[in-house]
Structure formats: C-alpha cells, structure tokens
Length: 286
Ligand SMILES: Nc1ncnc2c1ncn2[C@@H]1O[C@H](COP(=O)(O)OP(=O)(O)OP(=O)(O)O)[C@@H](O)[C@H]1O
Ligand SMILES: [Mg+2]
Image (cartoon, rainbow, N blue to C red; front, top):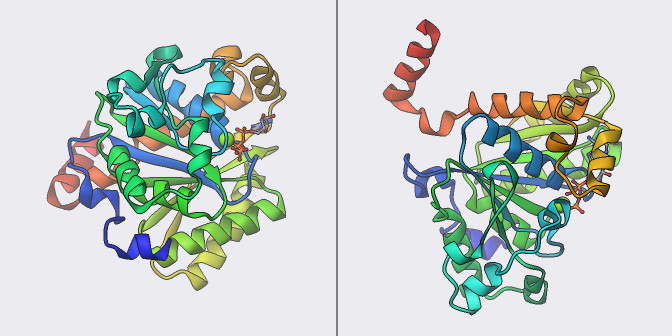
C-alpha cells in the first residue's frame, strides 16, 4: 500500500478535484459491522431530501452491501466498466429518493489483489465520477487493507464510523493512525453509531480525540455526530429498505438528518482562502 501511496497519486482529493466537482466522501471503519452501509445509504437519502444530487459508490469489494440493503440488482457494475467496455452511465442504477448507485460488484472479489493499473483506473474513476452529482458517498469495506485505503485515499473527505464498544474504538484508532501516517487527510470525521445517549457518543469521541491529539500530529478528528441504536434499523434491513424511508421519524432517521445537515454545513474543502472567508462572513449576516 505504501508503494501505491508513495507513487504520489493518492493525495488529498482537494488537490485533484476541481472546486466545481462533487464532494467525494468515503465512509469507512476499523471494525466491520458497525453500520457503514446503513449510514451511507440513509445519509444519501437525507442529503437528497436536502436537494443534493447523491451517488453512492459501493466500493466494498467483498460484499455488494448497498444493493442488498436496497433489494436491487444492478445490471452492470464497475467490473463491466473496467473490463467489459461499459460506460459510466451504463453502470449507474437508479435508487429511491433520486439517489444513484454504482456498484463495485461482487465480481471484484476475484480481484482482491488488484493490479497497479486496475487500482489507478479505480482511483481515477472515483475521482472523475462527475455524473451530475454534488456528493458521492463511497461505502468501503472495513479494516486496514490496500483496497479500502485506496478508496479512502482517493476521496476528498473521510467519515470513520465507530460504535462505543472498546474493540470498535481501538480499531477506529488503528485505522485513523494508518490514515494519518499517509498524510492523506488533515481531518477525519467521526460518526458514532449505535449509541444510547448522546453523552456516550461524545465519550467515544473524546477517547479517540485525546489519543489522537497526543500521538497524531497532522490529523484532527472531527466529531460529525452520532446515530441512535434503533430497532427500526434492524427491521428496515430485514425489509430491504433504507430506514429513512421505512420509518422517517424514528430516532435513527432523526440522527441521520442531523448528520446530513452537519455535513452540508461542513463543506470546508471548497471554502479555503479569501473566498471561504467571505462565504462564512455572508452566512453570518444572512
Ligand atoms: N443505529 C443502529 N441501530 C440498530 N442496529 C444497527 C444500527 N446500525 C447498524 N445496525 C445493525 O448492524 C448491522 C450491520 O450494519 P451495516 O451492514 O450497515 O454495517 P457495515 O459496517 O456496513 O458492515 P460491513 O463491515 O460488513 O460492511 C445492521 O444490519 C443492523 O442490524
Ligand atoms: Mg457494509
């Protein structure tokens, strides 16, 4: 992985994407099963309701999670784009709430050891998915491996999902440490999932933040928000529906709406320098 990173091609997406391009946000985690796919999908719903054009890129090379949660079966996947001459447009599957889905495809599992060329192509693809989107959410697999890191590295922004469980916190820290060592993102957003009370989420954040502040000089952990543990999530998963549609006013949906609002208020990448200063200034007076 280090070789790939060192080749100079994986840098902060802010340098590669034009200011006009979509925000590419990778959703990842140290430990598996912490709620990445549910958060990605439902955040997409909420962002779409707020007027954003959202594409989900399912980059979990192991399981095509998003399509299972949606109960859809994409005709073509990224595999077809890479190897069967299908265009980007042919591999887009429409989803609920006007969201669009691009699936990495379970077939990619065979390519667990992607060639350098394929990795470069994937990376470029992620960065050039300007398919009329304002936001591209990239749902990745869990853990520290080169595929996950390649996708996270290619995205401008990263959301790390963790739960208050000690093992999840340890694994999240391990992942953030690796990301920090590559110096790809100056800031990592944290979402704490399956929380009982907001206080629990804040405690989880503090545990991570204190350690990061001492040991990771160039990476800041930013608290984006939390998602409540909610039985409606489990029910919606069983029903193959996003919980935002299944139960729009349940606790988890409420949490997701807050996350979406926070994310939109946090478009810092495009607000650097003097123009950013004026953007903030005009907001203060509006
Ligand atoms: N807020 C929540 N409240 C209750 N249950 C939840 C919540 N979030 C996730 N879950 C449960 O955890 C399961 C795993 O969630 P999800 O598939 O989104 O995790 P993941 O991080 O994408 O997993 P993987 O690492 O396998 O891709 C869900 O099927 C659901 O049962
Ligand atoms: Mg998943």
